[in-house]
Amino acid sequence: MSSSIPINVVGGRALIYDIEHLKRLREEYHICGTLVGILPQVPQQNVFMGLPLELMPEDVYYLVEDLKVAHVVDDKAVHKSAVERVNERDLETLRKKRSEEQEAQMAAHREMAWRKRQDALERKAKKKGEVFIPEGEEKKKEVLGSMADASSNVEIPSTSNELPGYDTFRHQGGISQLLVRPSVGRYNMYKYLHEKGYFLSPGIRFGGQFLAYPGDPLRFHSHHTAIGFEDDEKFGVLDIVGGGRLGTAVKKCWVVGAQNDEEYRAYSVEWAGFG
Image (cartoon, rainbow, N blue to C red; front, top):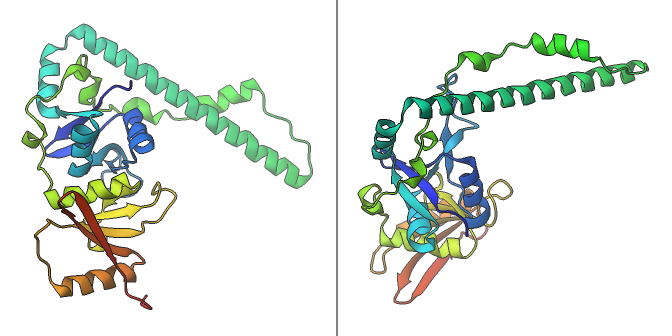
């Protein structure tokens, strides 16, 4: 049985730091989240984001309460506790591990740069009609030795889950103490679409609560923009008109739904011959 996935809650935001956990969420549970991490050297970065991965509250409640494959961690409290317990030997072990990982990454980077250089030289030789002779080990040492190791001057800050004993912590007070619980109507729509196999992401850009993708968002465009209502919640006819026109204008179907007794009912709205 797979181990429970820790979801770190920092300032009311649910974050995933481990790439292996990110892969499990995407491959096994169809949960993609939103990458929000930036490089320390590029603080203005706003595209091609990296870890951590931020989850919607609906993702967290679905994983923890319905599927029971994850648990929440109060990152602030855990980090403080772990720092108080850590000793110099633990810190030295952590430094050594990170140094080895950094050197392995740089070695892989240098090897990739060397292969690219040889490929470029081979293409150049073929273009001139010459026989390509790979450069020898001496030249390789000279070229790779001249590469600046920029990472050696960068101290990457540690994250809580690197500290000894971190994975033993779980928040015992319930999710609601750390995250705002989504409304019943909103959560029911999320669960309804997710259980039909859709991948979901925040839909505020297109006038909805969620965007629903028929498969992984890396391969598919979203088909629906969805809003979940309470069973007795009222909304105006103009909301239907506006939602339908907006959805059709951005080539999506506008979906609304609510739980009615034991049955969930969802309706789609499109404008015929529009857009």
